[in-house]
Image 1 (cartoon, helix red, strand yellow):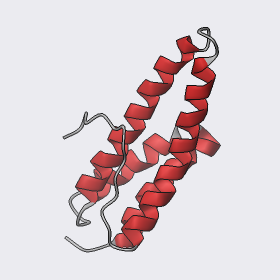
Image 2 (cartoon, rainbow, N blue to C red; image 1 turned 120 degrees about the horizontal axis):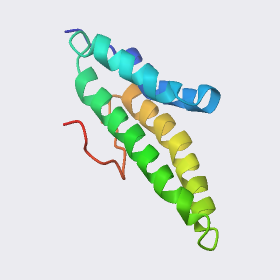
Image 3 (cartoon, one colour; image 1 turned 45 degrees about the vertical axis):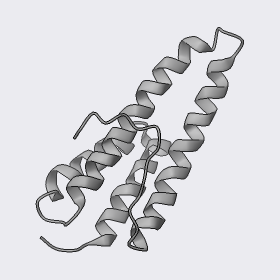
Length: 112
């Protein structure tokens, strides 16, 4: 296995493709994880962390939609989820580039 922080940073930043394509922020990290988990040190852990985060945010978004009819709380929740989905990948990519361990709060551990 090789050390490749740039690949790990790219994997974290690839989540931002959701802003452009809608689903690319899930598919690209999934493809990078599946193809590189045995080649890049730490990719298995980072890939699972990213995919768990993406799946969790999707679940939270689905839960927020019916809440729109309840005093508009769903709109606030969707806005918070959108901000989290933009900020956390950038923050964690910066952490990885410095050699620190990233953290995605509110993630449900689906992939272990």
